[in-house]
Length: 85
Image (tube, rainbow, N blue to C red; front, side, top):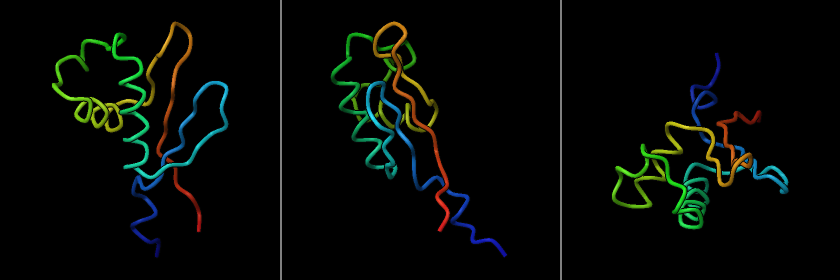
């Protein structure tokens, strides 16, 4: 019988143009997204503008999206991954 934890989102891969892929735990991804949002605060889409804090925006992105365009044609992407033991 398969372990139920193998289906949970315990790891993400973060793809940033010009960098190697990075494997992160959910809280680590959240920290990276917060930094990105602070660096690109002027580019927030409407769905993120409704949130009052960078914490809320980052959590919303992590939980509902997989991409953020930081400049035209350049995007950060993240995906939940399952690592085999």
